[in-house]
Image (tube, rainbow, N blue to C red; front, side, top):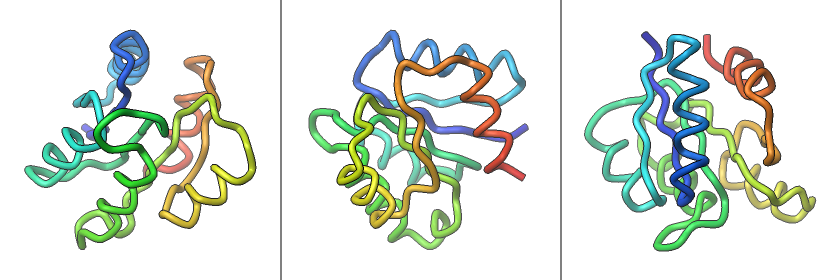
Length: 120
């Protein structure tokens, strides 16, 4: 079973992402911010990471940068899930190592389609 780390400071968004992915057969672990996610990610490996951009403590772009610095996450698909659709944020996310970008609000089919594209 493929493992996904879902990171968002909004409990309802974490629940929605988790529910959608679990229903599709993924094993989902969630975290409320980048700092918590980094700690979880260092304790095991995940097949993909989905993270919000704007969060307290550590934002999603910093999280991706930190994860990319770890050998076990060098090639892990990392998706940004955000209300930010501006080109500058996307460019910053790509530079940090984001694999893709999903704009909120998303629909479950869209999320699953993107996940299935990036996870082999």
